[in-house]
Length: 324
Image 1 (cartoon, rainbow, N blue to C red):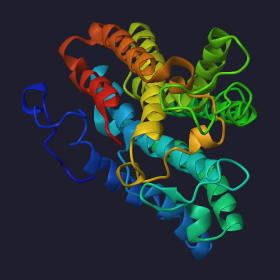
Image 2: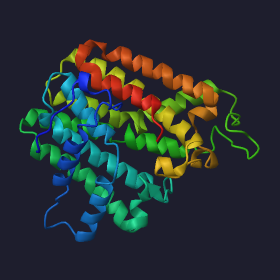
Image 3: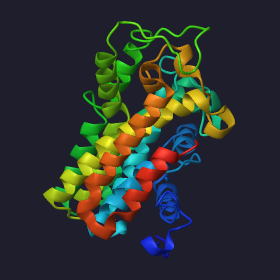
């Protein structure tokens, strides 16, 4: 791995994300990990690399490294977890974009995997990335117990009760609570069912699994691979819960208010498909306030790390204020 001078809290004024200096290390590790060997069919390998190496913020792998640093560990020891979680994230995006799922044709400013290649190749690329993520952990974490713990953490987050289950409920929720009308303004989306509290609880349950599960797993992997204490793990779990939900609230707001060029994907599709969203339930101002409250709770959770929390603190603010 190429050596790099990592930022300190005093030298990070020009990096609102808190992890810009980590991105080159992550990109290098991902590129190395995407050499799948001579037995991998060329087209399949190309589709896998297309998904994993697509331009992106690398939020989830950065969270692995940030958690490791906050726990007092070394970033290099946590890198296998960073690579593995990004492979799982890439697989989930491939499958979410499929015609049978969210039916998207644009991702990270480029054609989605099934548009660039074909639907069958995209499905196989996602399948292969799941297996490759766990292979990478097993081959690159030297301590067998740590490797097993890391595999279990990521597998549970990606499984039927979390990531996949959240996607299933997200699909089932379309047109269940929200009934958009062409005449409604962006701040006057009509709600059906008569109980916004129940709808909000259901929405948060979806996103704590669909989006929040991988965010929580990323932070847990960082703690695991750096020898974090139980106190560290509890603090990171609380941070993950609140930042994960804040990320989704802002994502819903951007889908309603941002343009496609800035987002690198189609916008406005949630309302068209009748998806359950935070602005739909709370209105624009209510959703913004919800994101601010969640960010405040996340910031409180990481005070236990003292000055080592600066990356996570910067990240929480970035999630709240991001424009794409």
